[in-house]
Length: 99
Image (cartoon, rainbow, N blue to C red):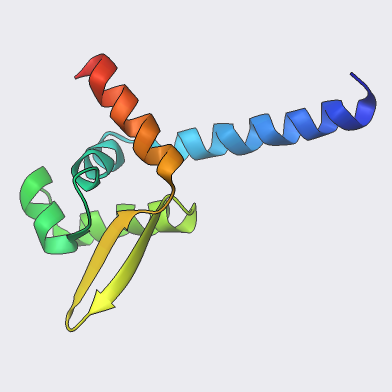
């Protein structure tokens, strides 16, 4: 492996590491598990994971910042969903292995 390939590999490893860190929080993992079934509003997520809307919003913002989830607005509601199929597959695999 030449130097350029090594640099590219290290950049990819760093990027994956950062993404894994962003989902490593227990509440963010719960949110992602709930989003496996499809998009949900903050209120729906809040009632499923039993924490405040402000706390849910904070974690959704972090997930959105990393491109893990996306949202759309309809009337007065914001619907959140997993944006990248790879995260659907990852969370589904984690759930099957450990839950």
